[in-house]
Image 1 (cartoon, rainbow, N blue to C red):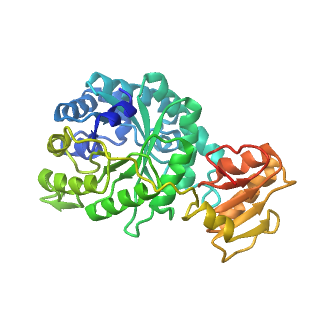
Image 2: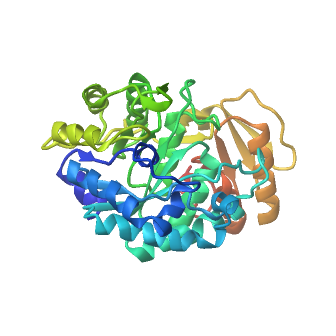
Image 3: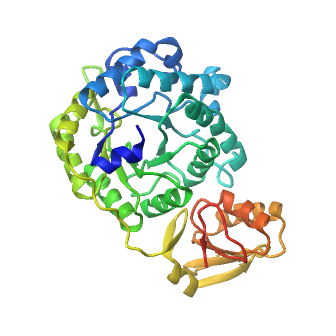
Length: 392
C-alpha cells in the first residue's frame, strides 16, 4: 500500500526496533543484514510480530545494506540480493506497507571526509534499484546524520524511481552529528521530493517533540516520530531499555500533540510497545500540513527566508571565496565550467556556514554545483534550476 494512501486515512503506525529484537531473541549475528539470507525465519518472525501488533508500515532489515558497510563482512557484492530478500520477507509477513530501510555508510562526504558525492550516490544506487525491483512501497532513509550523505541517498532513490522518506538522528545539541538543524533537514528533504520527514533513534521525548514542531514550522511534509525506548542499561548482564510500553505511548502522545502524522519506535521498542501504540492512534485523523507559507533557503547549518537572504547577502566570486559575517552569501559562478563549479562548491561548504544564493549563466555549471549542495539554494539564472533550488 502506498504511504500517501495511509497518510490520507489518518495517523500512521510504523513498527519498532529490529536489531534490539534480534538481541532479545538471542539470534546470533555478526551482520544483521546477512540474516536476510542465512536466517529468513528469524527475520520474518520479527516482521510478523509487528504486523500482528498493528504496525501499518514495516521496515526491512537493511539499515546497513550498502556496499561500503557490507564490505567489512565480505558482502559488498551482495547488497542488492540482501535488499531484494529483505523486501520479500516483509511482504511474506503480511506487511500492509513495506519501507526499505536505508542507513548511512558511516563515512563523511567531502570536504569533511574523503567520500565524494558521486561515490556515495553509486554506493546507494544498487540497493535503491533492488528495493524498487522487489516492490518496496518506499525507501526510508533513516538515522541520517549528515545532509550531504542524505542528499546522495535521495539522488539514488530518485534515479531508481522509488518514493522516499527521510528520518534524522539528532544529538543532545538539537543538531545532527554533521551539525544540521531540524529546519535544514526538513527543507532539504522537501526540496528533493521526500514524501515524509522525521526523527528517529532519539531517546529524549521532549527533544523529539521539539524536533517535530521545528520541522512542521517550516515544511508541509508529514512528520514521523520514532524514538528509542529510552536509554539502555545493563541489568544482570543483559541490555535493557528503560521506557516500557505505557510510558512510550505517553511519550508518543506528546509527539502527536506536537503535530506528528506518523509514530513508531526505534532501538529497544518491541511488538508490545507497538501494539499499545497502534491501539492509541487507531482512528486519529491526520494533522493539517505544517509550514507558514514563507519561501526559505537553507544551508547545512541554518536557514533564512528568501526575502531575508536577498536583502542581507554578500556577493563573492567563485574564485575568491572568503569567510563572511553576512547571513547569506551569493556565489557568482558566471563563466565557470561544471568542474570548477563543483570544486568551488566543495570549497564553499568548507569555508562558509551560511545559506547560499547562486548566480549562473550556464545550466550545466549550475547543475554541477546544485547536485552536491546539501541544502536549498536560491538561484539567479535565465533558466529553471533543478535539485530543489528556489529561483529568485
